Image (tube, each protein chain N blue to C red):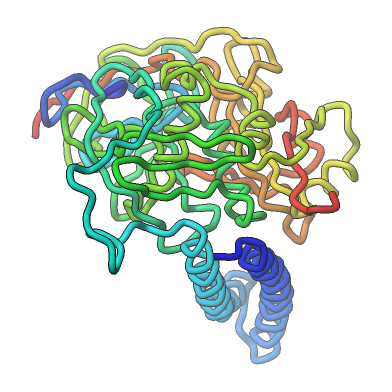
Length: 100
Length: 340
């Protein structure tokens, strides 16, 4: 899987630019990047949405689990007319599970 | 089964759906205006209570519109199911079962997967309803394909690929080409869920179409590099496909294309370091900070562009035309009508 390392439930989640990452039952998306800050959107199964900026070391809750932002990364520079989806695999943030 | 009358009926229902949607929008706008007027007339003080009253009344209109759309989508899905017949369990009536079962010749090689993904057997199942929401992107960066699927499903569902189960194969027919696929789909190694594109109802038509596209494109990892929606639209429909360079177009051309009813995909530009104004605008309108493809849904009453995110979540706010021309690079679209 491209968003979470093997093992269930995932101990680490890699949040990529181009698509939502599963964090338990929740989905995490990249809303903005101003490295080292990243703006992450968390969509819970019940429809609740949160959006906030995080720096490495910050903690967020997704899917009923607390996650620590281990590291963040600026997206690659791309030409303005680059095809959609290009750079979508770039890992913007790595989250580490703190508890179940 | 005669395909042409069925596709014509689907086309008629889709046009009816668009017409009904426009009517409901007009009713909604009129209802909101009158509700606020009534609130003021009976002495409800303040703009906010009046707006609250209007919102509760227009919610009834939204519910009615949603119910009508759902009914029409279900009718379209029922008609499309006639084009995509699922196999009967066991042999056809009156025929003995082939013993041993004959393998379908010429099955396509399973397309390569990304890390942590494996194939698992999944029978073909058809979606309960066909519309913009019926395809959602999974853990691969192929927004160009999924957005194209979403817009074709909403605006020209009669052009969707025919997908059928036949013995030990799933057949995906796009114009000019048939893909004979193993009845397997990519699943997450850890939890067994669909790894890539999926439908909200768990049906498998969408992942099989994506699998055929992966065969066409040289494997799933190749799809992850992104691509051009015009190519995906042409592959899906076989119809002439074009692109409009948005920054060079004027508002009226963009508006006309958005409202045309032709399947259309808008491509945003990346918003990276050093582009503070672009990044701020992307945040304001809820655009992904990456070059991304969105299905075009039309214009609202204030001539703002309505977009659908193929993630199935985090849809952009309506984007004013002048802002749209600054944040987007192109609209890829294809002809939906026989006569263009």
